[in-house]
Image (cartoon, rainbow, N blue to C red; front, side, top):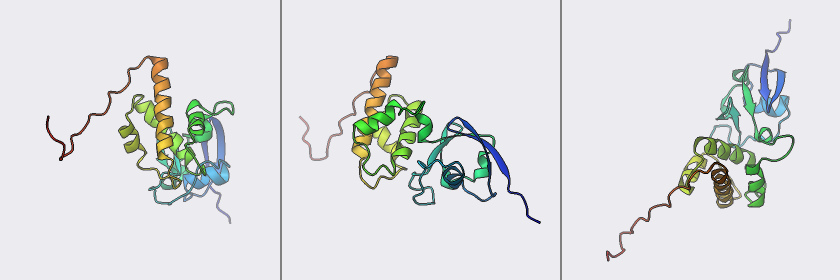
Length: 180
């Protein structure tokens, strides 16, 4: 007699889904193979590269480290979920405008990470952005453009909400600089 696969209920990008899955299937595979959302990528399968990042109940997780059944009754958001009515979000548009992608393979995970960072810290410095994105890998090396896009988006958010800009970074004196 065949045993039935568990069925889980979850919301993916605002749409309710009822998906059959084996208990050992990763959330990454569930999203890609059962829900047909392809922006979530597999890179390292160890949670080191960040390519599989999704929001689970609004918090970033590496979906290669989460079982699909753990998402039962929960909300999953991918980069597609940031685009309202099929239109790119302002942050996504800035990634395009600033050429913050070449091959585009890693872009969805960076956009999600940046979106989360800006919800936690709408006023990040370049250093804070670099530190926050350090768990994500881009082989094309468009980090500079990504940071520019994120800083521009933060600036636009500040202007809308009248939040002051972060203070400029302090200059660190080098050892061989003379005291004047």
